[in-house]
Length: 127
Image 1 (cartoon, rainbow, N blue to C red):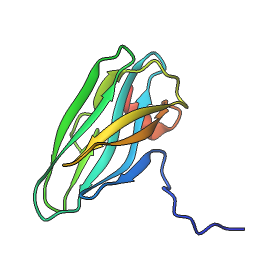
Image 2 (image 1 turned 180 degrees about the vertical axis):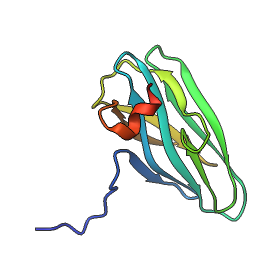
Image 3 (image 1 turned 120 degrees about the vertical axis):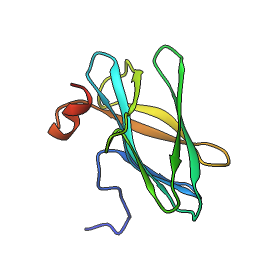
Image 4 (image 1 turned 30 degrees about the horizontal axis):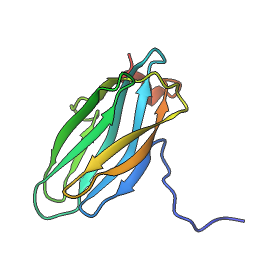
């Protein structure tokens, strides 16, 4: 029987905060510890939004980046001329790794999948 439950038809995860939507957030790993976090972030407000993405690498180092998203706009992390967040992750592809996203209030934790270069569209991120 088909389900009416909504789902994210992508390889990554999504989260909806009050002012920010994150779409297709995932890590791409070369299997040797080198990983990059990519995804798209949408501002649902009528003003410029500054959001923060934070995670921790496998050595315990906090890695964070601020992104600025125009009103009703989108920021692509790792796409369209922007760099992804590079970090060392020793978890194997197929694992999940926590990432915290904040836009204003308290951060939201999302468990983000780690993929490898098996799918052609992700190979450029680890080559």
